[in-house]
Image (cartoon, rainbow over all chains, first blue to last red; front, side, top):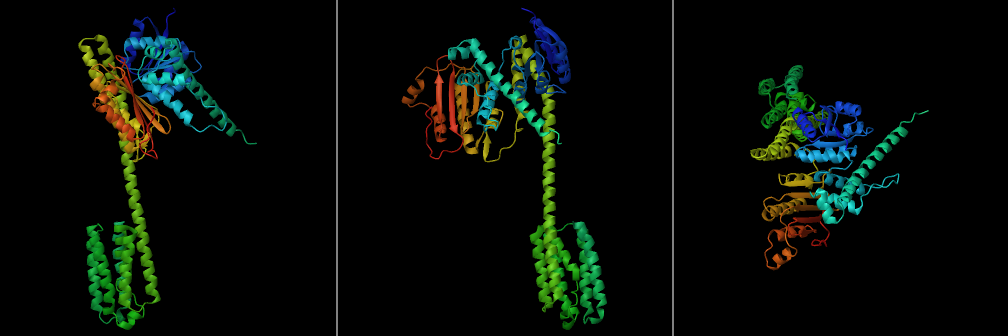
Length: 219
Length: 369
């Protein structure tokens, strides 16, 4: 297995160094660190790491903005933030982040989440699962759009899995309870995130097109 | 506004004296005019020095104006008064009306104008075009100045309140940013490192985590948009239940319910969490999930404690000792919803509470769940 390459972005020097040290000790290659949003974007584009370990509240650019600006780069983003900031995390996840972990997580949990992120597996906290669930319920309630385009919907199974994640069950416990494989549970979680991000991209494109048409030059 | 009044009083008095002086030949008792003007002058000075307009000064203003109007009949012979000579205080009478308007808004202004008008009519007896003209002007002056005084005062009050609220909000934002960037980061660092060090470090970590949570709750509370006094935002209520052992998951948007119903639902959630502490074992943690299902809300409370055998609830009910379970179920059924328990030994317990947001048309409808 090739060594994982990770960029650590955090404005708190104490944190940043401790994180970098933990990752290095676990055999992960920390290719660099960044103390603010703009430099996180620049260095990600320059070093193209496997994973960007991103603090949500960086000076200069917010987490969601960082995610949006590096959307073209093949780097996966794992958000690290204090608990209680799930709403802002949701914005970052919609903008393309792949996982979320609270800062009070242990070293082992962080290392495991970085490895999972590198493989494209989504990392959810219960709080984030509750928000994603709420987001889909809101979309389902919204009046049908004029374009007639269907709003994204979750399958019953996806809703079930998300609810269990939101109630604090690990993916192994969920697999046991639903009598499905561990891998299937992870796929369900990942699909919900994929649908949300797709919906977000479609909305952004639609918005851009509408604005473009509105502002077409008057002859 | 009182400053304008302080300028108006002496100017109006000077004008009144000038008018009286031009008509001095027609007077039968000039001493009455002199006495009135002396009193008015003294009062004008005193009122200006006092600086404030109160109910009492308004009464004095009006009283003197009425006395002055009535004294016109003493100073001039009857024929002259009926002939249309100005009353002794003439436009000075308006100062009482203006003072009343400043003090109490358009109603006081109108009332004061009516008092002066009645005095004019009674004093002059034979009403002529000039008197009516003056009365109309006086009523308009009192009402309009009163209205603008009240509006000015209200907008001043509103401005002050919004400036205060804005300052408080900015200060709160500044504090929470400072706390967020410094203290909370350091606390979570201590929590993590303490746990890694082990031994006494774990106690330290527990302390740091506890402080981090309560501090965070403090700086995030009340940042939502107020939803009106009649509705309660369940997300705010549930966020307050978050603790070291309780995780709360919920939608990003407020989930609102009429306040009394929301309070009942929150009480049921609290009771379920208390039950976790009592029965799930000392190591148990709990998770709360709030879902907005449109017309209904659902709150699930799960713990990872010792759990219970199937049928235990039914047996306890048969033995007539259900305590908390009955009270939770009772509350939910009162709301037109229901409560459901799922548990197995060693696998924790999950309580699902479901209730319609609005009071159902017929109370007592049961949720099949």
